[in-house]
Length: 296
Image (cartoon, rainbow, N blue to C red):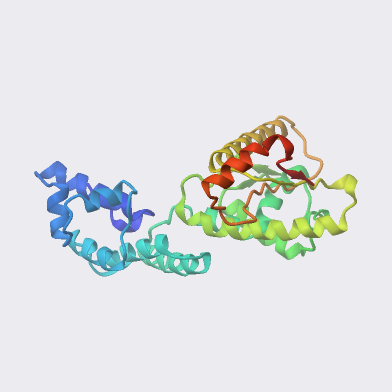
């Protein structure tokens, strides 16, 4: 039986599940579905579910009506479409909060809402790593161990959140343990918003560390380089593999002496360069004479 749309994070998946359920009970086709929604192309909604195109607002309205969505379910479906089409994190946050209101009003737990709150504050990730390695420590002691100024009250609030949402457990002696060694956002659509915010926060802390800490306590390095689309994607894969290896090396240790943050960044400094064929030929002739990349 098809679940309510308010149990979904992805409008494409709901459309697919709706079609599959109708198909199971009848000779329903994509062409018939598209016709009900007012599309000239019989394959349009199939392309939407395949991720090859997307719904815009007017199309979303017609599709929701064709699926029989009314009242809050219709509104929820529209919000999912608006969330995906949002141009920036501020817009996404607005639609996410509206989505939360609907799920909360109908007592549906929004998958990933606890992870959303976790990533909204940099403090939760630090406390989650630090508290288990300070047996019996009180909030004030934990606060003093963090370089960035925080209060004991903020630590206490973070600990309560982490315990309530099962990121940490605590025993009768006040010792904390991680419920899971590794946290991942997985495929939770909504978590991308606070993760972006967390990365910004950690970037600001990196700049602060650059100014405040001696070279012996920090490592900053960079490389400015010219790339192709192929080599860019190769670098991304290498960085992902490197990140996994670093985590494996750190996880192999049973003890923690301090909590660190590793930022991995790769971004373009220029727009794509469009070259004439003759220029490409000249560049190839000069390859052996030039150095591609400046390490800092």
